[in-house]
Image (spheres, rainbow, N blue to C red):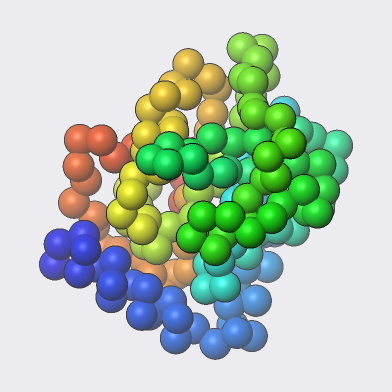
Length: 180
């Protein structure tokens, strides 16, 4: 199966996960993320606002109110992260995804700080390669931010774990993947 076929297959599988099961699995992932972030002593957290079928990790935002928290906003073919202090700083944007409002400040990486980027995925494999929605936003963003100290964490439902994803040259893999 190619990536396009796998994407379609895993989106269908993910949509069939019951809401109670999705909530429970999201809570398990969030708990593991909180532990990982606390142990890693990260200064900044790059999050995402989940679509209805994605792993909901917004509990991480609420738990780490004392850290810099950032969400992505798509601008044409690129994605940038912006500081968000409250979830009310988000508004519906591209692809019907909640994104930071225009007045939110763009991230400025500090060489003395450590960051963690939580990446959603339609599917992940054990090695950290992912299938997203096919636009390459995270790959392009992380390639452009390679000078920053960013630990990449993939999150995915166990039901959508791949036995192996055929990586492309531009794919940037997660350092670790949390499945539930």
